[in-house]
Length: 56
Image (cartoon, rainbow, N blue to C red):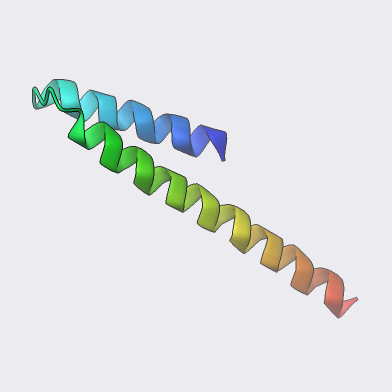
């Protein structure tokens, strides 16, 4: 989860530097998207584990 968020923030920072965006808009948007993706990934894994344990 942390790695996804970290890589998203790095991507956002890189885009801000590449397109010379002083408001850090890309950083904010990409970081929020990466947080959502990380949360979805964790929830999906928990559901998958729960369903596997209920089948046993």
